[in-house]
Image: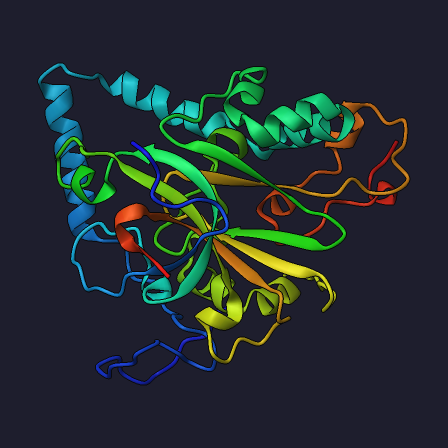
Length: 222
Length: 94
């Protein structure tokens, strides 16, 4: 998705355009930020505010969340209209059933329909619904995805193998502030009578970010 | 805190330069959009980021933009849109 280019960046653009690809390079990780993080962490441990084990546990907990949790939520919304209504109107309440607490953010569920395809990006950093999907994929944090998703979403979608017909609206959600976004994909045909566990197997991480559709019934084993 | 705008209201994002932890990306500044929903009041991230409490809280909205308004040369369908959260102090009535 990215290509390097060799011209220097000392010129000013009103809008930073490179053939429609506004920003291409990822900066190197900031050494300053790494040093700051280590210093603060070591100080807090030294002063007994937190322990190394607390840090490990917190990382363990964050990393234990996977897209399987989001898939369960989507499958239930497909199967249970009352749950879906709560999920769309009062997501805090709906997520309680899954032991998920989004605070201090809120989950905003956006529904794909015959007329609308939703996709999610965070242009300013990499805001992501971690409590329901876990750690974001590497490409979600890359500058090229973040800049191009708002600028040329259909081109990005095609690169992900997702061709949205011209007559269907593409709605991009820039997750820039206090909400986190989950795409509720459309339930595929041919899944009538499936239980939630089987339905959840169709729901991929990428479909919940909105860069692809869910799997087809033929894609999974019985 | 009463919201100044209601869903359906036309708004313009302020075009101002402001350093710091600003959650209004450059590409929407100065652009015309429509309030999609009132999200609620939240601590002001511009103050929160520099160690303050974030008070007074700011009303947050989701604003819908036509892609053609954001990008003159937008290469997609005319109905394509973008939705983003904007705090009230970054919005002006149209």
